[in-house]
Image (cartoon, rainbow, N blue to C red; front, top):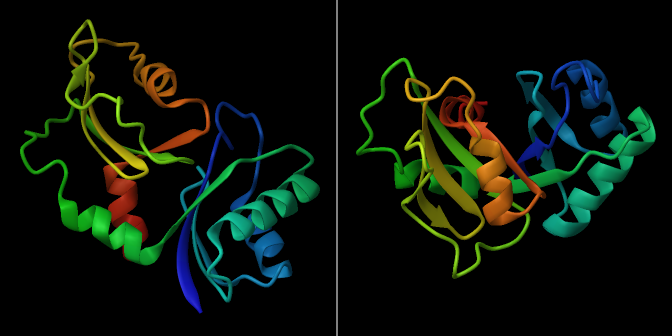
Length: 177
């Protein structure tokens, strides 16, 4: 059995694409996924599966969710070993965190393009892409600079729409499941 973390994109945001975590767990168990644990309502799942074919497993999960909830939900998977490696990188070790600071990991469906920027700063200086690794991008948002951040738009513009972003604290909590 391989342990995975699944990140569902775009669910339970602003009352749209509602996926109750209890129902999601049942859907996943029905397709043979074991030891399912969810974190928050934003689509973070830890589970075990016999498969080591990530692309097939992502497709199977996405199809099952669409069938159950009647709308498509992109699913991005990482092995638990990959999650632990991301945490071990300690990508935010040089960042001074204040109550207005948000640390993010963006998961991509494809590998980061060579031309993708690190240390890219938004025009208002509120958002910075710190670094990138394989299929993840690490960024920082300073809410004290702007009240309406365009961070997600900037990430989608740089890396495409098939991405999903999580707060660093969520990743740390997920690793403890």
